[in-house]
Length: 160
Image 1 (cartoon, rainbow, N blue to C red):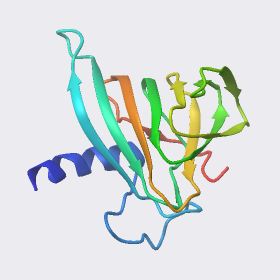
Image 2 (tube, rainbow, N blue to C red; image 1 turned 60 degrees about the vertical axis):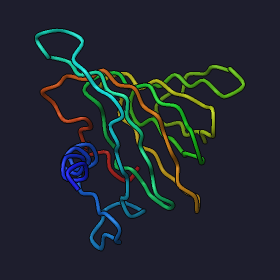
Image 3 (cartoon, one colour; image 1 turned 60 degrees about the horizontal axis):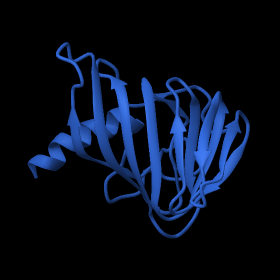
Image 4 (cartoon, rainbow, N blue to C red; image 1 turned 90 degrees about the horizontal axis):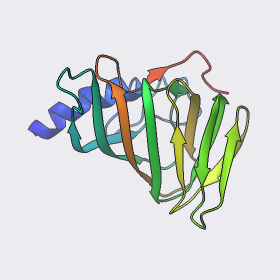
Protein backbone atom coordinates (compact mmCIF):
# COMPACT_ATOMS: atom_id res chain seq x y z
CA UNK A 1 0.00 0.00 0.00
CA UNK A 2 2.95 2.31 0.66
CA UNK A 3 4.00 2.04 -3.00
CA UNK A 4 0.55 3.15 -4.17
CA UNK A 5 0.52 6.07 -1.73
CA UNK A 6 3.82 7.29 -3.19
CA UNK A 7 2.91 6.73 -6.84
CA UNK A 8 -0.55 8.28 -6.83
CA UNK A 9 0.66 11.84 -6.09
CA UNK A 10 3.27 11.47 -8.85
CA UNK A 11 0.61 10.25 -11.26
CA UNK A 12 -1.64 13.17 -10.40
CA UNK A 13 1.24 15.59 -11.01
CA UNK A 14 2.00 13.86 -14.29
CA UNK A 15 -1.49 13.78 -15.77
CA UNK A 16 -3.83 15.96 -13.74
CA UNK A 17 -6.83 14.20 -12.28
CA UNK A 18 -6.54 10.44 -12.51
CA UNK A 19 -9.13 7.95 -11.43
CA UNK A 20 -8.11 4.56 -10.09
CA UNK A 21 -10.45 1.62 -10.86
CA UNK A 22 -13.50 3.74 -11.66
CA UNK A 23 -14.95 6.01 -14.33
CA UNK A 24 -14.41 9.75 -14.06
CA UNK A 25 -17.73 11.48 -14.60
CA UNK A 26 -16.58 15.06 -15.18
CA UNK A 27 -13.63 14.48 -17.51
CA UNK A 28 -13.18 17.24 -20.10
CA UNK A 29 -11.44 14.71 -22.36
CA UNK A 30 -12.90 12.49 -25.06
CA UNK A 31 -11.99 9.41 -23.02
CA UNK A 32 -11.80 8.75 -19.31
CA UNK A 33 -8.33 9.42 -17.99
CA UNK A 34 -6.85 6.21 -16.63
CA UNK A 35 -3.08 6.09 -16.68
CA UNK A 36 -0.72 4.43 -14.23
CA UNK A 37 2.87 5.57 -13.80
CA UNK A 38 5.31 3.11 -12.24
CA UNK A 39 8.82 4.39 -11.55
CA UNK A 40 11.20 1.49 -12.22
CA UNK A 41 14.41 3.37 -11.36
CA UNK A 42 15.53 6.95 -10.77
CA UNK A 43 18.49 9.03 -9.73
CA UNK A 44 20.07 12.47 -9.80
CA UNK A 45 22.88 12.80 -12.39
CA UNK A 46 24.60 15.64 -10.49
CA UNK A 47 25.07 16.45 -6.81
CA UNK A 48 22.96 19.62 -7.03
CA UNK A 49 19.90 17.44 -7.80
CA UNK A 50 18.54 19.98 -10.31
CA UNK A 51 17.61 17.20 -12.73
CA UNK A 52 16.13 13.74 -12.23
CA UNK A 53 16.71 10.76 -14.51
CA UNK A 54 13.87 8.22 -14.47
CA UNK A 55 12.87 4.95 -16.05
CA UNK A 56 9.08 4.64 -15.96
CA UNK A 57 6.42 2.20 -17.15
CA UNK A 58 3.17 3.88 -18.21
CA UNK A 59 0.03 1.82 -18.67
CA UNK A 60 -2.77 3.54 -20.56
CA UNK A 61 -6.15 1.86 -20.19
CA UNK A 62 -8.37 1.11 -23.19
CA UNK A 63 -10.35 4.03 -24.62
CA UNK A 64 -8.26 6.63 -22.78
CA UNK A 65 -7.01 10.05 -23.90
CA UNK A 66 -4.00 11.48 -22.11
CA UNK A 67 -4.49 15.26 -21.79
CA UNK A 68 -2.52 17.66 -23.97
CA UNK A 69 0.72 18.44 -22.14
CA UNK A 70 4.45 19.21 -22.20
CA UNK A 71 7.41 17.94 -20.18
CA UNK A 72 10.14 19.97 -18.39
CA UNK A 73 12.88 17.99 -20.16
CA UNK A 74 13.51 15.31 -22.75
CA UNK A 75 11.59 12.04 -22.68
CA UNK A 76 12.26 8.92 -24.77
CA UNK A 77 9.56 6.25 -25.00
CA UNK A 78 9.14 2.78 -26.51
CA UNK A 79 5.83 0.99 -27.09
CA UNK A 80 5.92 -2.37 -25.30
CA UNK A 81 2.27 -3.36 -25.87
CA UNK A 82 -0.75 -2.03 -27.74
CA UNK A 83 -1.27 0.79 -30.23
CA UNK A 84 -0.86 4.44 -29.24
CA UNK A 85 -2.39 7.15 -31.41
CA UNK A 86 0.08 10.01 -30.89
CA UNK A 87 -0.36 13.67 -31.91
CA UNK A 88 2.12 16.56 -31.89
CA UNK A 89 0.35 19.88 -31.29
CA UNK A 90 3.40 22.19 -31.22
CA UNK A 91 7.02 21.33 -32.02
CA UNK A 92 8.16 17.99 -33.40
CA UNK A 93 8.97 14.48 -32.25
CA UNK A 94 11.49 12.04 -33.68
CA UNK A 95 9.88 8.63 -34.32
CA UNK A 96 11.73 5.38 -34.96
CA UNK A 97 9.50 2.57 -36.20
CA UNK A 98 10.20 -1.03 -35.20
CA UNK A 99 11.72 -1.64 -38.66
CA UNK A 100 14.28 1.16 -37.86
CA UNK A 101 12.66 3.69 -40.26
CA UNK A 102 13.06 7.18 -38.78
CA UNK A 103 10.79 10.16 -39.32
CA UNK A 104 10.06 13.56 -37.84
CA UNK A 105 6.45 14.04 -36.73
CA UNK A 106 5.60 17.71 -37.24
CA UNK A 107 3.01 19.84 -35.40
CA UNK A 108 -0.54 18.94 -36.39
CA UNK A 109 0.38 15.39 -37.40
CA UNK A 110 -0.82 12.12 -35.86
CA UNK A 111 0.70 8.65 -36.07
CA UNK A 112 -0.18 5.20 -34.79
CA UNK A 113 2.70 3.72 -32.80
CA UNK A 114 2.84 -0.03 -32.21
CA UNK A 115 5.06 -2.54 -30.41
CA UNK A 116 8.75 -1.78 -30.98
CA UNK A 117 8.19 1.81 -32.13
CA UNK A 118 9.94 4.55 -30.15
CA UNK A 119 9.77 8.32 -30.02
CA UNK A 120 11.72 11.24 -28.59
CA UNK A 121 9.89 14.19 -27.03
CA UNK A 122 12.00 17.33 -26.58
CA UNK A 123 11.31 19.61 -23.62
CA UNK A 124 8.26 21.87 -24.02
CA UNK A 125 6.90 20.02 -27.10
CA UNK A 126 3.08 20.04 -26.87
CA UNK A 127 1.48 16.65 -27.52
CA UNK A 128 -1.05 14.03 -26.44
CA UNK A 129 -1.71 10.35 -26.86
CA UNK A 130 -4.79 8.18 -27.10
CA UNK A 131 -5.47 4.52 -26.68
CA UNK A 132 -8.37 4.01 -29.06
CA UNK A 133 -8.30 0.23 -28.65
CA UNK A 134 -9.83 -2.27 -26.24
CA UNK A 135 -6.39 -3.37 -24.92
CA UNK A 136 -3.95 -1.50 -22.67
CA UNK A 137 -1.00 0.42 -24.09
CA UNK A 138 2.28 -0.02 -22.21
CA UNK A 139 5.14 2.44 -22.70
CA UNK A 140 8.66 2.28 -21.28
CA UNK A 141 9.96 5.79 -20.77
CA UNK A 142 13.32 7.32 -19.92
CA UNK A 143 13.33 10.99 -18.98
CA UNK A 144 15.71 13.69 -17.84
CA UNK A 145 13.59 16.40 -16.21
CA UNK A 146 14.02 19.52 -14.12
CA UNK A 147 13.49 18.05 -10.65
CA UNK A 148 11.69 21.16 -9.34
CA UNK A 149 8.85 20.91 -11.88
CA UNK A 150 5.98 18.45 -12.35
CA UNK A 151 6.63 15.52 -14.71
CA UNK A 152 3.95 16.78 -17.12
CA UNK A 153 2.45 20.22 -17.47
CA UNK A 154 -1.10 20.38 -18.83
CA UNK A 155 -1.65 22.93 -21.59
CA UNK A 156 -4.67 24.89 -22.72
CA UNK A 157 -4.56 23.04 -26.06
CA UNK A 158 -6.92 20.43 -24.60
CA UNK A 159 -9.15 18.29 -26.83
CA UNK A 160 -7.47 19.03 -30.14
